[in-house]
Image (cartoon, rainbow, N blue to C red):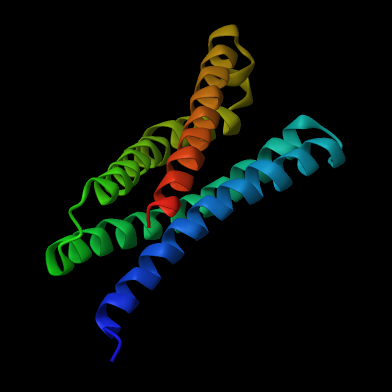
Length: 154
């Protein structure tokens, strides 16, 4: 007889990882390049990507809740404490921290700069936006790498 509780937890755990990693690949590898190539100007493309990422952040928040809760329950109820699972849990923790920083600090500031063209056109505003954009991009790449490792060890 299958252990339906474990199978359900593992299903939601794996789905959260796959949705998060798949979303990164979809937005970063498909939507962003197409938007910047096909839309008439960088501003329009940036707006489309910004809105896409804002919606994706809501999905990532759900994934974080699912991953943290299912990881804790599987570890406590089923003794998933081996070094292999520790690698997975560490990746999930690092992804969660990175994404939370981007969702709560980086993305709101980028939206503020994007919505205020006067501030963004100043040298300081442009430099700040570039730094935030670079941090956001590196965070997504980091989360993609960690997510891939976490899927491997799930």
